[in-house]
Length: 184
Image 1 (cartoon, rainbow, N blue to C red):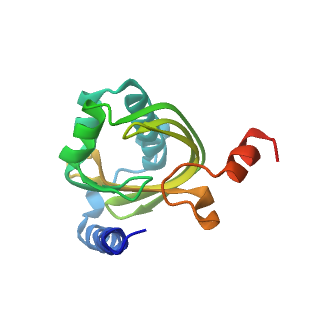
Image 2: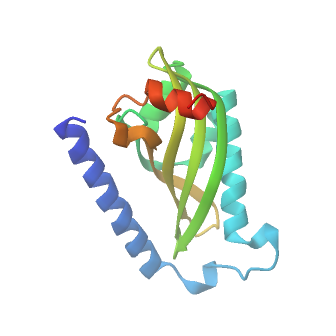
C-alpha cells in the first residue's frame, strides 16, 4: 500500500472515531426513540439499510445509492482507493465498479450516540477498473443519524481477508481462491 493510501486510511479512521465521539456527545436523547419492536429498533433498521445498499449495488441503482450516502461521505475501496460521494457514484455510473455478487455474513451493529458502526464479511464478485474481483472481504460502514431520524452512510472501508497473505490489489491469491472454493 502506498504511503498516500496509508495516510488517507489513517485520516479516515481518525475522522471516523472523532465523528463517533462528537455525534455521540451532541445527539439529544429525545431523538433516539425507544426500542419497541423491529420497525423502531435501530439495529434492525441498520441491518435493513445494509440489505438495501447491497441490492442497490448489485442493480446499479444510482438513485438509492445517492440517497443513502451523506454529502461528506468518504470511502476506502477494497483496493485502497479513497472516494468521495461524487467519485463513488461516478465509478458505479461509469461501470468502473460492477458487482455481480455480494453475500453478507457475520454482521455486527454498534450504536454510539448518533453514529452506527456496521462490520460484516462479504463474499464479493465483479469487476473493478476492468479487472475481475472475487473473494472474501471484511468491511466497516459508518452511518450517521440525522435529526429527522434518517440514517446516512458517512464512511466505508473494505479489506480483503487475505491481506495478511500479501495481497494489496483486492484480488484473491491462488491459495485463498482454493480455500474459498473448498479446494484447499
